[in-house]
Each structure stands twice: as structure tokens, then as C-alpha cells.
Image 1 (cartoon, one colour):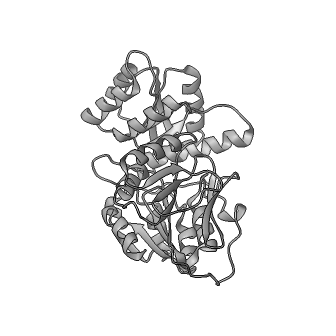
Image 2: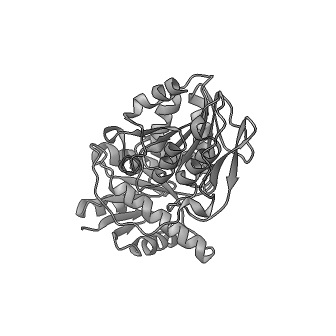
Image 3: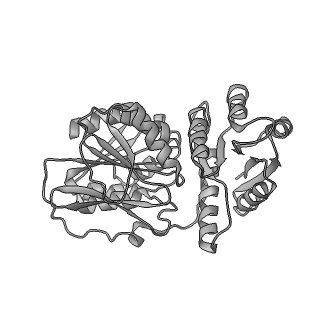
Length: 353
């Protein structure tokens, strides 16, 4: 299999070298070149077109947003934004995704060995996912991934079949690559009195705050980044904070969320598998599970546990997925009761609830 060729564009020599070292450590990835600004990058693209570009936003001579617009209008290439954790960086990163960027990673930095290894796994996986995306027509190719932990490291699988039926339904949703736009379409379709929704979208820390705020400004229901102990109520969607697992819990008739640290699960933190397992355990037949676009299989086993617990489960179909990975794996396991195009999922959820 041909390696994924990556062009790194960043004005920091340290970031360029660190990213190059991280990406080169993966046998499926080749660093084609590095560039200190968009003008150097444009010259390099003329020589050879990369499969993926990692792009800084704040650069001299031409900013990343302007360069991204030029790429998408002249020669679309999957772009991954490499941004800082600042509030400004978060807002610019989301703007870039609206303009066609595939995903966001945060600038790599040194820390503990575990921290750096987790960053390496995440950055390489995001680039691999981006390589699967054809801006004009979605395509797929199989890429080997490293072994991953299951939800067992965060929450034990429920062995009890007993679950008290309640009148309130809880909707749990998982998404990854392409999920920011998919979630916008999904949430915009819900009315003010929609059932409570809990979401895991694979996204770096801090970016989820800006993402939730953006959705809150355009949707009828309230959207917020989840905080530990938040109650799941009608008319509100809670989004897992980046770099933290999110679990659904129950106390009597009240559903609430727990924000929790822990290792990567299915190569992610937050993990869809963790959310879905907790929903199977604490909500069971009172829940509806939805799995959307994304690379890999995070959420597939969790959705099967949801279905086995009596929940109704929905997978996004291939034609409307940016990357038909997570839904496909759930479908293979027989975990999906229904397979629907993105635009029909919200309506189906409302009918079920």
C-alpha cells in the first residue's frame, strides 16, 4: 500500500520538526515536505501533490485561513488544521473547518512519555482519516491501526438485564471525522422540547467549548460543553469536553453526566464506546443511540451493547458519511436497528422518542 504523503505547513521550525518526527514514526505515513509559509507550500505543491496538508493558521505573509480558501477553490486537498489551544486558535480552527478543513489537531508539545505517545497516536490517526476523504467524492481505503484499549478501562460492562422503564428518552450520539458538520445538520432539526442529547465528538481540548457555543447560537435547543454533574434535560444537548471521557449516569429518574479522566479508549478520549456503554448500563431501553461519520471503530462495540440492552440504534449511511468507518463497523456487528442518511436521522429519533 502506498504511504500517505503529508505536507507540513507551519512557521515554527520546532513544530515542523516535531510534527515530521511524529508522522514519520507511523509506517503508513511519509512526510513529503515541510514549508514555513503558504508561499513555500504552494511551490512545493506544484512539484508534487500531497495526500494531506497539515496547516497552521497564524503565519506571516499569508494566514492559514486565506491559504485554505485558495486550496479549496483551486485544487482541493484534505487539510488538517494544526492550531494552538488558545481561544483565538479555537475560533479560527472552527472557521477553517467551515471552509473545508477535515479536522483539527493541537500543536504538539513535550510532556510525559504517556502524554506524548497519546498525542502521537491522535495526530497520526487524524492524518490517516483525512487521507480517506476526497473533497469531491467520498472514498475509502483500509489502513492498519495499532491495538487499542476497550471501554473496560473506564466502566465495567453491565451484566444485569433489569432496567426500569421511564417516560423520558435519552439520545446518545458519537461522531468523528466529518462530525462537526453532521452534528450541525442533526441538531438544527430538533425543536425546543427535544429529548435530552449527550454527544461525543472527537475533538481536541478547548475546541469543544467553541464548537458547543457555535451550535448553541444556531440551534433551537440549548447546546453546551458538558460539565461534571450536568443534568440531561429536555431541550439541551451536552457535548463531551475534549480530552475527557463522558459517561451517562442515573440517580432515580434523573439522568446526569460524569466527566472523567482515563486512558485512551478505542484510541480516543473522549470515546464513543465509553458513552455508549454507560448509556447501556444506566439507560438501556430508555435510550436511543446514533453513530455518525468517522474513521475507525470507536462506538461500534458500545452500540452493540446499547442494542442488547434494549435501546434503539441508528447508523449513518455510507453515502452521507465523510468517512464510512465507525458506522460501517457498527453495522458489521449487527448493532444498528436502522441505517439512515444524515438528513433523516433527527426525524427518526424524534419519532422513536
